[in-house]
Length: 285
Image (tube, rainbow, N blue to C red; front, side):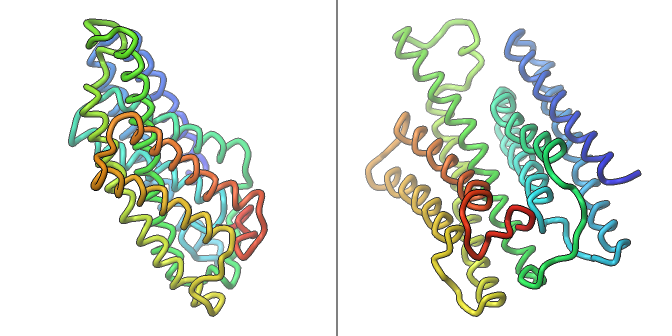
């Protein structure tokens, strides 16, 4: 069996999980919520095996590197980290409905990788031949994944808050009754960002160390570096506003959504549309 087959099974598992979560939204059957989470966890296990198998395949081909080097591998790893962070939040807080707003992010990543990208294993370019590759990519993508979870939770918050404003009261029934209270969603958004922000900070630090190893300078204001700093400042502003000005609720939710949009542009937009030291990001990370 090949890693490609396992990745296809992963995509199917995440698609099934999403459908089950949507059925959970429609029926409010708690068993479906549990099933959606378990299917997502099964997909995570299969994807973990697939990543390990792809790593082995690279050594069998004589290439021998961690499967984190090109756009295909990075998108797959991003999807893996999203479900990993979701699993942590789900097991700790058990708000199953969050999966309906988070698992689709992982599914989109896997579907795009499987259907629209070259999945070939290729040798590393010299700039990527460093152990800093592992440290930088893992910390960055775990941070990105936490921000993806925070974005999904923020969307839930905005929907719930809008409904409460329209009805002027806590809903007695219907879809919104399944959502956690807005104060809980606001707290979950904050907690997810508190996971992601230190990881992003470590990602920027390890990236600077890697840049010095590869290019002889810690910082060169490359578009990727600049956008990483922009993302860092957005989430730093989120935390600063929360601690010093008490920013909660809608403002915090919108800032979380804006931060994730900036994160996606930093990750994909810079690689695909801007040139610089990371211009090889269309095929390599």
